Amino acid sequence: MTSGHFHHIDISSIIVNREGRQRRDLVAIDELADSIKRLGLIHPLVITRDHQLVAGERRLTALRALGWTQVPAQYTDEIEPDRLRAIELEENIKRKDITWQDQVRAVQEYHGLRAGQSPGWTQNDTADAIGLSRSQTQAMLYVGEELAKGNRMIAEAPKFSTAEGIVRRAREREDAQVLNNLRESIGVHQDDEDRPPESILNVDFTKWLDTHIAPRFNFIHCDFPYGVGADAFNQGGAAAHGGYIDTKETWEALMDALAVATNKICTPSCHLMFWFAMRKGDTRLYEPTARALERMGWDINPQPLIWMKTDGAGIIPDPERGPRQIYETCFLGSRGDRKIVRASSNAYGAPTVRDRHMSEKPEPMLRYFFGMLVDENTVMLDPTCGSGSALRAAESLGAKYVLGLEIDREFSERAKEALSRARTLKAAERLTAAE
Image 1 (tube, rainbow, N blue to C red):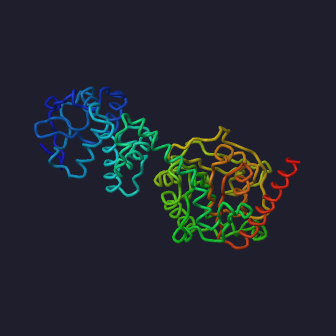
Image 2 (image 1 turned 120 degrees about the horizontal axis):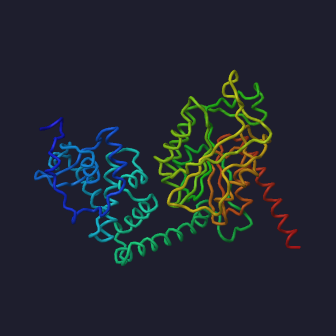
Image 3 (image 1 turned 180 degrees about the vertical axis):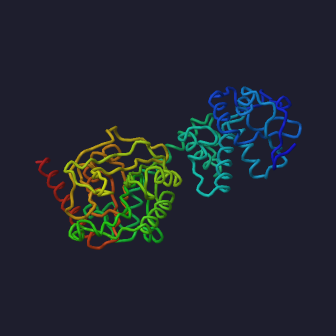
């Protein structure tokens, strides 16, 4: 009997070849059974014409525990080839009797298939689908790239951990070349140490990506406009503090550019700080923003960073109902399972600053959070740098190189002047310390 393209099969007729199955332990059966009881069976089993189980052993076990006598199933010869191949790969990836090389190739092929079937499919989606950790999946995909290139050292490694170590160390060495590549790309060489490379460019991030051959960065700091009408703040006085055009279209264009940048100019192991508005009734809520960043390939920490404004400054989203919002929130993201430099709490108090820009972030607060991420190996990009306070904060912590982009010429000039003064002061402090 069929229902659409599903068949209702006598559960007792389904044959499970336990010796050939990938799973040795069937975990969380009770939880799965409870979910099926409440929500129904969302995905049917996959079986051959002679009722050999191909996919769905946990579901079958849960259904038997619930006392089902018939189950919906699909025959393998009724499934589209690409989908059937993805199912076969998903089932085979964790088999005990295949080599680590074949397992890695299976993960890579599975990821490629699913990405081709579903626009926006990410490495995190692959990890969740096949039941491996995100860091393990990332490592397997990196190793898989080297296998596909014919890297003999990787292919002949006795264990996956050995191959992963070779690839990781190679990528770390690649990271170490980022600054040299950057200096060469802008015409600064080792004999030009007294002339630092340009750190603030008066350009549009969305257009710069299309034309600039950039090195890769291992820390991205984003403070995009959020469509709150910043040009109207303080009853028309925003311009004196650096107001700016702030629209939904601007936001969407910057988000599209960040998606491109994530793959084009970020190192495989990279950190992200992304300031966002925690407000009701718009598209910049916690969940939609986090999901958008995850689709780009960022692993978002569930705990946001919080700047508490100790001077009580802030906006009232609903003046008739309050309250005043005196904090700002920031996502902490990573790709490639990048580790932090040191741990800090996720909240910091500091007063607001509006010396050069309407939405300027105070340096003490940025230095506090950057302390988790920035060290002498950091190469940072701020695609909408505004006042440049993030660049100054990163340099004060010893960042190897910082680059800020700012579309407004006046803002970029103010930021350059402030960064130059900070560098002069730091140089003077070094001379004093040497004496």
